[in-house]
Image (tube, rainbow, N blue to C red):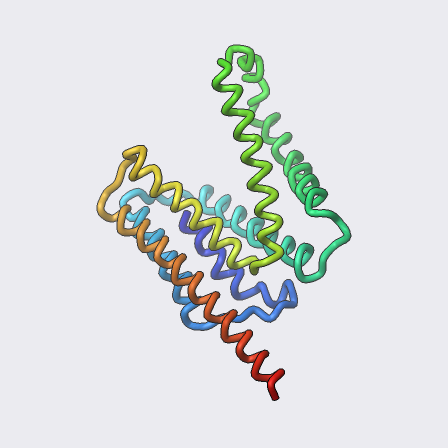
Length: 215
Protein backbone atom coordinates (compact mmCIF):
# COMPACT_ATOMS: atom_id res chain seq x y z
CA UNK A 1 0.00 0.00 0.00
CA UNK A 2 2.80 2.41 0.91
CA UNK A 3 4.78 1.70 -2.25
CA UNK A 4 1.74 2.17 -4.49
CA UNK A 5 1.03 5.52 -2.83
CA UNK A 6 4.58 6.65 -3.57
CA UNK A 7 3.82 6.11 -7.26
CA UNK A 8 1.85 9.37 -7.81
CA UNK A 9 4.79 11.37 -6.43
CA UNK A 10 7.12 9.70 -8.94
CA UNK A 11 4.56 10.12 -11.70
CA UNK A 12 4.21 13.82 -10.90
CA UNK A 13 7.96 14.27 -11.39
CA UNK A 14 8.33 12.39 -14.70
CA UNK A 15 4.92 12.81 -16.37
CA UNK A 16 5.73 16.03 -18.18
CA UNK A 17 8.86 14.61 -19.81
CA UNK A 18 7.12 11.38 -20.88
CA UNK A 19 3.81 12.72 -22.18
CA UNK A 20 5.20 16.12 -23.28
CA UNK A 21 2.34 17.82 -21.43
CA UNK A 22 2.74 20.91 -19.31
CA UNK A 23 1.79 19.54 -15.91
CA UNK A 24 0.68 22.31 -13.58
CA UNK A 25 1.67 21.78 -9.96
CA UNK A 26 2.13 23.82 -6.81
CA UNK A 27 2.97 23.33 -3.15
CA UNK A 28 -0.61 22.22 -2.40
CA UNK A 29 -0.53 19.51 -5.06
CA UNK A 30 2.74 18.05 -3.82
CA UNK A 31 1.77 18.56 -0.17
CA UNK A 32 -1.51 16.69 -0.61
CA UNK A 33 0.37 13.67 -2.01
CA UNK A 34 2.64 13.72 1.05
CA UNK A 35 -0.46 13.90 3.30
CA UNK A 36 -1.92 10.85 1.55
CA UNK A 37 1.33 8.94 2.01
CA UNK A 38 1.40 9.95 5.68
CA UNK A 39 -2.12 8.62 6.14
CA UNK A 40 -1.11 5.33 4.55
CA UNK A 41 1.92 5.01 6.83
CA UNK A 42 -0.27 5.69 9.86
CA UNK A 43 -2.86 3.16 8.70
CA UNK A 44 -0.35 0.31 8.44
CA UNK A 45 1.80 1.46 11.39
CA UNK A 46 0.86 -1.53 13.52
CA UNK A 47 0.96 -4.09 10.71
CA UNK A 48 4.29 -3.67 8.92
CA UNK A 49 6.94 -6.29 8.33
CA UNK A 50 9.83 -6.16 5.90
CA UNK A 51 10.58 -8.69 3.20
CA UNK A 52 13.33 -7.93 0.65
CA UNK A 53 11.67 -10.15 -1.96
CA UNK A 54 8.28 -8.62 -1.26
CA UNK A 55 9.72 -5.10 -1.54
CA UNK A 56 11.33 -6.04 -4.87
CA UNK A 57 8.01 -7.22 -6.29
CA UNK A 58 6.20 -4.14 -4.97
CA UNK A 59 8.73 -1.77 -6.54
CA UNK A 60 8.50 -3.74 -9.79
CA UNK A 61 4.71 -3.47 -9.61
CA UNK A 62 4.98 0.28 -9.05
CA UNK A 63 7.31 0.74 -12.04
CA UNK A 64 4.95 -1.18 -14.32
CA UNK A 65 1.96 0.71 -12.90
CA UNK A 66 3.50 4.16 -13.44
CA UNK A 67 4.69 3.20 -16.94
CA UNK A 68 1.24 1.91 -17.88
CA UNK A 69 -0.53 5.06 -16.71
CA UNK A 70 1.91 7.38 -18.48
CA UNK A 71 1.72 5.46 -21.76
CA UNK A 72 -2.07 5.25 -21.59
CA UNK A 73 -2.33 8.99 -21.01
CA UNK A 74 -0.01 9.67 -23.95
CA UNK A 75 -1.83 7.30 -26.34
CA UNK A 76 -5.34 8.32 -25.27
CA UNK A 77 -5.16 12.09 -24.73
CA UNK A 78 -1.82 13.62 -25.73
CA UNK A 79 -0.96 11.78 -28.95
CA UNK A 80 -4.08 9.64 -29.62
CA UNK A 81 -3.67 6.41 -31.55
CA UNK A 82 -6.19 5.34 -34.18
CA UNK A 83 -7.99 2.80 -32.00
CA UNK A 84 -11.47 3.14 -30.52
CA UNK A 85 -12.02 3.12 -26.76
CA UNK A 86 -13.61 -0.33 -27.07
CA UNK A 87 -10.57 -1.54 -29.03
CA UNK A 88 -8.25 -0.14 -26.35
CA UNK A 89 -10.22 -1.94 -23.67
CA UNK A 90 -10.04 -5.23 -25.59
CA UNK A 91 -6.32 -4.79 -26.28
CA UNK A 92 -5.57 -3.88 -22.66
CA UNK A 93 -7.32 -6.95 -21.28
CA UNK A 94 -6.04 -9.31 -23.98
CA UNK A 95 -2.41 -8.41 -23.31
CA UNK A 96 -2.92 -9.00 -19.58
CA UNK A 97 -4.00 -12.58 -20.35
CA UNK A 98 -0.43 -13.47 -21.33
CA UNK A 99 1.21 -13.07 -17.88
CA UNK A 100 -1.94 -14.38 -16.19
CA UNK A 101 -1.82 -17.52 -18.35
CA UNK A 102 1.81 -18.04 -17.40
CA UNK A 103 1.03 -17.66 -13.69
CA UNK A 104 -1.86 -20.15 -13.99
CA UNK A 105 0.61 -22.75 -15.27
CA UNK A 106 3.40 -21.91 -12.81
CA UNK A 107 1.12 -21.97 -9.75
CA UNK A 108 -0.85 -25.02 -10.87
CA UNK A 109 -4.15 -23.19 -10.45
CA UNK A 110 -5.63 -24.99 -13.46
CA UNK A 111 -5.80 -28.15 -11.33
CA UNK A 112 -8.64 -26.56 -9.35
CA UNK A 113 -10.82 -25.90 -12.42
CA UNK A 114 -12.49 -29.29 -12.04
CA UNK A 115 -14.17 -27.92 -8.91
CA UNK A 116 -16.19 -25.40 -10.93
CA UNK A 117 -19.10 -27.79 -11.39
CA UNK A 118 -19.57 -27.83 -7.61
CA UNK A 119 -20.31 -24.11 -7.48
CA UNK A 120 -23.83 -23.08 -6.58
CA UNK A 121 -25.97 -20.82 -8.76
CA UNK A 122 -25.29 -17.89 -6.42
CA UNK A 123 -21.54 -18.31 -6.87
CA UNK A 124 -21.91 -18.38 -10.66
CA UNK A 125 -24.05 -15.24 -10.50
CA UNK A 126 -21.46 -13.43 -8.40
CA UNK A 127 -18.74 -14.53 -10.84
CA UNK A 128 -20.76 -13.18 -13.77
CA UNK A 129 -21.44 -9.90 -11.96
CA UNK A 130 -17.73 -9.52 -11.19
CA UNK A 131 -16.99 -9.89 -14.91
CA UNK A 132 -19.57 -7.21 -15.76
CA UNK A 133 -18.10 -4.97 -13.07
CA UNK A 134 -14.59 -5.52 -14.47
CA UNK A 135 -15.75 -4.43 -17.93
CA UNK A 136 -17.24 -1.29 -16.38
CA UNK A 137 -14.03 -0.52 -14.49
CA UNK A 138 -11.94 -0.98 -17.64
CA UNK A 139 -14.24 1.22 -19.74
CA UNK A 140 -14.42 3.95 -17.10
CA UNK A 141 -10.65 3.88 -16.57
CA UNK A 142 -9.83 4.34 -20.25
CA UNK A 143 -12.34 7.17 -20.60
CA UNK A 144 -11.11 8.83 -17.40
CA UNK A 145 -7.54 8.87 -18.71
CA UNK A 146 -8.68 11.15 -21.54
CA UNK A 147 -9.67 13.88 -19.06
CA UNK A 148 -7.16 13.74 -16.19
CA UNK A 149 -3.39 13.44 -15.89
CA UNK A 150 -1.75 10.10 -15.18
CA UNK A 151 -0.83 11.31 -11.68
CA UNK A 152 -4.43 12.28 -10.91
CA UNK A 153 -5.64 8.92 -12.19
CA UNK A 154 -3.21 7.08 -9.89
CA UNK A 155 -4.31 9.18 -6.91
CA UNK A 156 -7.93 8.35 -7.75
CA UNK A 157 -7.18 4.63 -7.91
CA UNK A 158 -5.33 4.64 -4.59
CA UNK A 159 -8.10 6.58 -2.85
CA UNK A 160 -10.66 4.08 -4.12
CA UNK A 161 -8.77 1.42 -2.17
CA UNK A 162 -9.15 3.47 1.01
CA UNK A 163 -12.86 3.91 0.37
CA UNK A 164 -13.11 0.11 0.26
CA UNK A 165 -11.13 -0.07 3.52
CA UNK A 166 -13.44 2.51 5.11
CA UNK A 167 -16.46 0.51 3.94
CA UNK A 168 -14.99 -2.60 5.56
CA UNK A 169 -14.48 -0.77 8.84
CA UNK A 170 -17.96 0.78 9.00
CA UNK A 171 -20.17 -1.87 7.40
CA UNK A 172 -18.29 -5.16 7.79
CA UNK A 173 -16.84 -4.31 11.22
CA UNK A 174 -13.31 -5.24 10.18
CA UNK A 175 -10.38 -4.47 12.49
CA UNK A 176 -10.29 -0.77 13.20
CA UNK A 177 -7.68 0.51 15.62
CA UNK A 178 -7.49 4.22 16.38
CA UNK A 179 -4.33 4.51 14.25
CA UNK A 180 -5.94 2.79 11.26
CA UNK A 181 -9.08 4.95 11.46
CA UNK A 182 -7.06 8.18 11.71
CA UNK A 183 -4.73 7.03 8.93
CA UNK A 184 -7.65 6.21 6.65
CA UNK A 185 -9.24 9.62 7.31
CA UNK A 186 -5.92 11.42 6.71
CA UNK A 187 -5.40 9.59 3.41
CA UNK A 188 -8.92 10.39 2.20
CA UNK A 189 -8.51 13.99 3.41
CA UNK A 190 -5.30 14.26 1.41
CA UNK A 191 -7.25 13.12 -1.63
CA UNK A 192 -9.78 15.90 -1.09
CA UNK A 193 -6.94 18.44 -0.78
CA UNK A 194 -5.39 17.11 -3.99
CA UNK A 195 -8.69 17.39 -5.88
CA UNK A 196 -9.16 20.95 -4.63
CA UNK A 197 -5.58 21.88 -5.54
CA UNK A 198 -6.01 20.53 -9.08
CA UNK A 199 -9.30 22.41 -9.44
CA UNK A 200 -7.65 25.66 -8.30
CA UNK A 201 -4.80 25.17 -10.78
CA UNK A 202 -7.29 24.62 -13.59
CA UNK A 203 -9.23 27.75 -12.61
CA UNK A 204 -6.08 29.87 -12.52
CA UNK A 205 -5.07 28.47 -15.90
CA UNK A 206 -8.40 29.45 -17.46
CA UNK A 207 -8.24 32.92 -15.90
CA UNK A 208 -4.74 33.43 -17.29
CA UNK A 209 -5.85 32.41 -20.78
CA UNK A 210 -8.87 34.72 -20.58
CA UNK A 211 -6.58 37.56 -19.52
CA UNK A 212 -4.30 36.96 -22.51
CA UNK A 213 -7.28 36.85 -24.87
CA UNK A 214 -8.58 40.10 -23.35
CA UNK A 215 -5.31 41.82 -24.17
